[in-house]
Image (cartoon, rainbow, N blue to C red; front, top):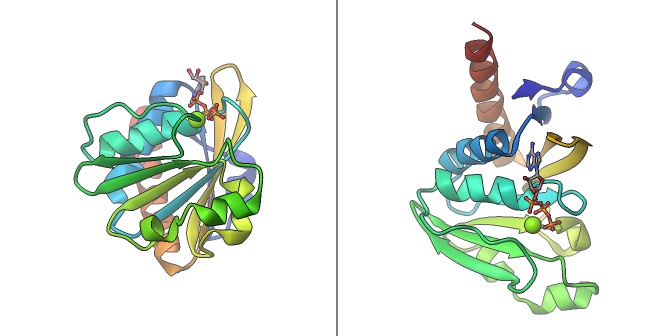
Length: 176
Ligand SMILES: Nc1ncnc2c1ncn2[C@@H]1O[C@H](COP(=O)(O)OP(=O)(O)OP(=O)(O)O)[C@@H](O)[C@H]1O
Ligand SMILES: [Mg+2]
């Protein structure tokens, strides 16, 4: 795992870029997040097809001590999984109209007692909660992905600070 150079230089307290070099690293990053999150946290994942949204969600599930495998998309919109906390794994891929997203009644999840992870969140940004951790994933090369974390709200600045500390420690320990 690398700390993204370009963004790191200009990143303030509210954003962080990490570069994953393999699916395993992405899952480990997710597992870190899964250990950090608390009830009511909302993580919005944005990134094109096959960038690693589900891979990260699998890691988050692992970090929450969820044993079931987190399946990739589409045939289910919401999966509820239970570990240290409930995980609501939501995938908006199949939905094209904002009304369809509104009709899902997702607030029950967002303001419930679990952690919500939303794939293809860009499809519904206007109607999803304004306070969230945004995770933008980009394809860099066959095995490299950039993860840009942007906090929206106080709680998410705190998660970002914890994530930054963890990743600095991890980068240092892998260099020594
Ligand atoms: N560093 C990496 N992190 C995550 N996935 C990677 C990485 N390198 C290669 N991959 C591959 O990219 C693919 C990511 O698939 P995944 O299902 O997680 O993407 P997704 O963003 O959820 O796709 P979809 O848009 O279909 O939901 C997997 O085949 C995985 O092996
Ligand atoms: Mg997916």
